[in-house]
Image (tube, rainbow, N blue to C red; front, side, top):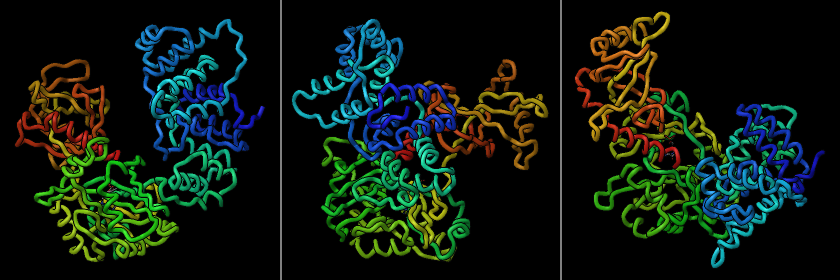
Length: 576
Ligand code: AMP
């Protein structure tokens, strides 16, 4: 039976959760989800979508439940009559408080006749009240809101209530799947235009319930999604250029070159009421961490309402030299003693785009116009807030000189932008390019190799790469590279490398040979991840051997510390 969404029984949603959890294919998940969305299509309240996301507020909201595992254990104990100690023991065994909740509530419900049914509306209402509880008695109030739900919950309902509270729904539904299901539910065809309209609307308002509501009304409604200064929108992302020439080829001439500042992204919003909010690339509200920026914005930007896109970059107060991003990353995360940090780690804001101005969205205006407007409304003040350093040129030599200046100025490289282009929130676009020196390079030692099959029988086809751990004075594995060719001008074919490695074999296990650490190679890689596969605890993604380093000893290879530093730098970069 088709139910109105706002009166839906929570158990029906839990059945969908179970289905989604069981099916790992993305297509299947989208199918399950769109069947479900069909059912709530005509409901007035589309907030159930938040529950599917494992939340009760839109993505842009900063509200948090503030619920610890300990509080969940207390609530469970109160509702089930099982002692907190026993619950904790079960938790240690099962590793998932959701499953523990399922077990204890199922047991409790056996034999009791219980008629009170939980609705999605009730779950949403109780959970939405949690973040606003402050002051005395907060814990007790939270406890009673949660217990009220658990007492009426069946086993599987309890499981998902607890998982939602802890922010670990584990049903594997990413935002791309939600987008696709909305398209399938609201449109006859899954055309590129329809997918884009849903995604674009989401990127502007980051609220799937609202997007779904608009999609139900049709594509026009989606396309008229308005920006709201104060609500975060997704930042536009860049593609890579290989060189200045390559950049001109891709964005045309003349092009706008700007410093690529080595800092972190800041989207600065001011609404009609004069309230200023600052968001990171991940849409975290960091306004409180940056009172200095709020002050600069008030002083140097002449407009009533706007959304600016910018990069904050650190500098040394004494030498006035720019600092790399990792030196100032603390400023984003630190929540206390902020004034102290403002003094210790000053930043300069470099504004490079404007997306909204005095009540109007500028997303579809050409970049040239937007960047000119910036120069009109911003009073540049070095080391506080200014427009990004820029060069408009068609000349390769001049552009290369500018690129070199950026690097000499301790920046990462340059951004190259097409003059006519629009601003597309959330998209990686071909009209904004980044150019920076290839930096993902490490010298590593080969410590094992695997014999190939077919044409490669008898020769090594895959090579295990290790770095040097100075603490234990041993080599630690961090990746495997295959893909060397049969012939190569650089002396780097797999047969040639095999010849060099064979005399160094220590022992063999099946097809794997352990190799004395001696041969050092330079490798290029995409990034580093944590990995249980290798004994360093880290793994390289897409490592490619590019050259031999006969001039290097094994101990000269990259150290584990360097690898960990690279990993941390990369992690921070992804987030900010
Ligand atoms: P990447 O993080 O390597 O993909 O490079 C894109 C990032 O460069 C953006 O997300 C910004 O944070 C940063 N950036 C620094 N300077 C600029 C600039 N002038 N224009 C656009 N993005 C910039």
